[in-house]
Length: 472
Image (cartoon, rainbow, N blue to C red; front, top):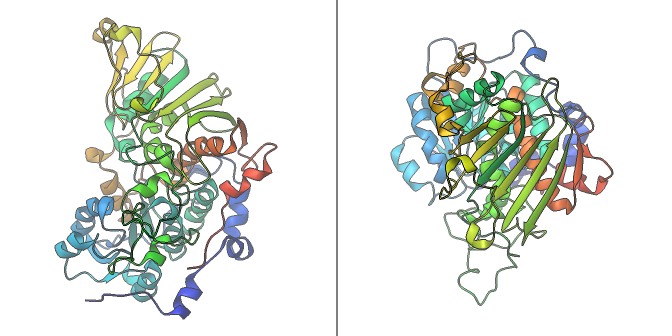
């Protein structure tokens, strides 16, 4: 059993990269920089869309990057095929996963894993913090590996576009881990709206109780006198590898294992955590692609951390036959002053909203979804719901509503692209989600131009769309 530590400097230097290297050496970056939102979809890909499929009847050989925390939840699916490698920068956090699969080689550095395992890996599951989704995903795709990556797909819009272009170029099977998109509810919402059950939809409100971690604070450098913030790096953690492409920072006990979500260098805040879940059904049902004006209100945000709460308003113009629509996102805990949309009067005077969900307001009625994952839609008011005749099912269903199994089957030649693959869905959804954070950081309304992947009149925001990378 291989227990690899930090790789030799020659390997690290060879594998390290910066944004400049992408711009100079990769045709993908040039393509992605001018990739209009939603332009490249399955129909535009070659007829033989996927390559390197495992159609011989053998098991899919999967490597898992990030196997503590959320990553541990994916291992059962991997092991049902063939789990060939596990990688985690914190061997203590990964201890339980390692114990379940003691004979699987383990690594700290995904670059060394790819270098040593080579063609013994068919596919990769990535469950790292947000800022380290893109680097191993791109490396895997460029080596012809199929990729499943947790939500949000990437830390920045530029990264999402590069991965979308890379997936097309290399013909790999991809999937983002917003599992609700494989569910029945997401499809029912789209079918009901397309059938005109509530009439044309002109307004949608979505909300979440996240963050449930610290946001709206500065996170100053750790005080060496304060044992709650400062201290030696645990011997089981490679802090350099955890930081990865993020800026150099002194080890801080407050950041791991979970609070990184609220810090811009590593996470995407409450919106990035839940947006790819809760925004997914509205995005899917209403085709929320293209140019959009985005504005925000918030409290407590800074250059370091996402705000305590926020309200983000997207204003989409008409999209084909679909009318203009206003989409409003709310996050934060109400005890901290976070706002919520009005409770629909159809629910009664004493009703309260669920912890997360969406309300669709159409010309003929409302649709209320009380789930974070688009899984519990109902028509309002109740008497109309009782008389409601469901329209025919027009969309394909995912077997067992299992997005990981769907991805594995596609890697093994099912011929069906995963529902939240990078090309058709995940990149575009992630882009819209991250536009909310872009508006927060801009401090004023932005007008997004998908043709140029930029905000009109705001070149200063480009550093958030295409960030710089630390050599590590």
